[in-house]
Length: 236
Image (cartoon, rainbow, N blue to C red; front, side):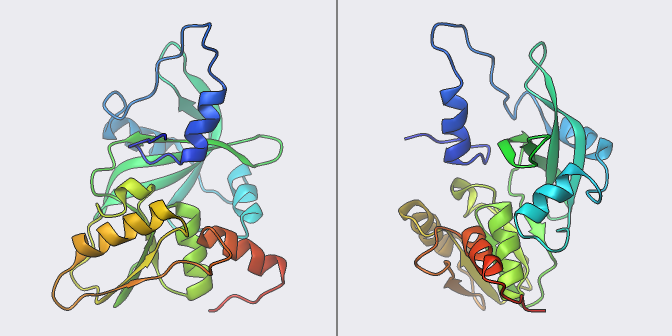
């Protein structure tokens, strides 16, 4: 069992572990304590509009027909601390607590295919989320950025991303929200996270509903990919 408290997926952690040669001294890991909010803001400010970049190609491959809010592209995004720093192309996903930028999730991209190679958080997320649209009465929350965006495209409901199942119950839900949709993954960890979140977010005049994807799909991004491959029309 592996866990990353910075919001990385299990697949990313396992992928990085396969690259480690136990006969060699490993590269020091990146930590949020060494790379605080100030660095996240600096890298975010260096980044550019996603349009006409490798980042836009990546989003298109994920069936995002429009560019999501609060994402940018960095052609030479730093990864790993000195003296091991690499500069790689990355899609940046803003993590905000209310409106303050507290961290960024860096989705590093293959320069040829635009597929993601690995993800890493920079900064301290605290109670922040990727805020995929401003909610009125209804807000969805999902584990991953791509799942949150897929939920919005399929359900026409603003959806935020906790960027990790471990953080699913740690967000700040706006006081005016009346209905909270828990767009969790279809796996035991996702269900556990949603159950904890339902208790954590409970308050008067807030209705909380479980909203996983259809049973044949692991998450909302998978469901969106299947619908788009079938030629489905999206709402709105």
